[in-house]
Length: 379
Image: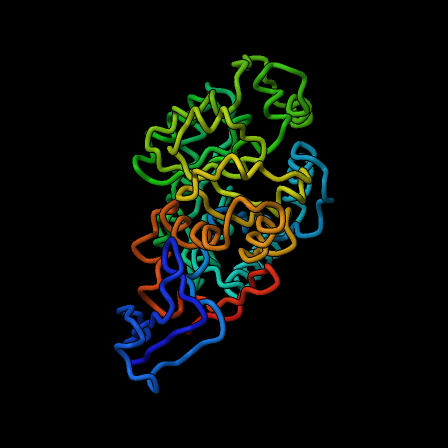
């Protein structure tokens, strides 16, 4: 039996009262008690904050080989064009090795679970061996509603490869400008109550596209040689156009850089909002208006996006970016977003997001000079 305490203990949504102690048996936290219930010479005091392991709610490990390949501040549409142009110019071995290194980096940064976007099966090899728990989102793309059945059929075949080796996976539409409402409907039908994810309002060009105005997204489709003559702009925001298609309400909207107050009022608290601030700065050099989300504290979570759009897969760095950019959220609220909320968003809160459970899933953190730093795992 061990007894662990620290400068502060964070559990789910708040710091525990001073003097709280973790009771550890067989490397698992089985109870949290007051220090007055434990002989003082039996308590191990750690220098830092003890918190649940981080949940990276949005990542693309398949793109890890593109680190430092795509220039910063290109804007989303040019970024997407460069991803398409570059991602296949590498051998499978290079792609797999880069993904494995990204996995190791996330472990060394205190990440215990990841929502990972997948377009291929290339990440399966490192995931089955990893200490990280992965939920893989099989990403589907197709704006033409006539193609929905074949797209979902292919997605389910890919999902089956993850299922066959015991990896958690579900279908996920890519983004409003690249998936038809009919495709989203079919994804929801096939997913049932499983979690899904979508890149939401990441660029102002998306708003222009849905309002029927000239948009760089039209240029992207021209570059890809994909005709979209069939598309009729709904003359609404993209979120207003598709939000009620997500009938399971267990969905993660990612980026939300250009989400408006009106959008939030429309959808209420139906969704989880995943922020990837470092990627937002890398691609668009703009952050969401965090003040709009101050009443959504129980619904925000944190992602890193990919190494194609980020210098590191580090949740502490994402939290620090938000803290430096805005005073809307407290450290306590952002720790909730990065642990408990992320676990709920990925439907993993039975195992992650709490101090109870394996020591290997808990982090020791340092917070000084308004910066959060990962120090070590507890085991």
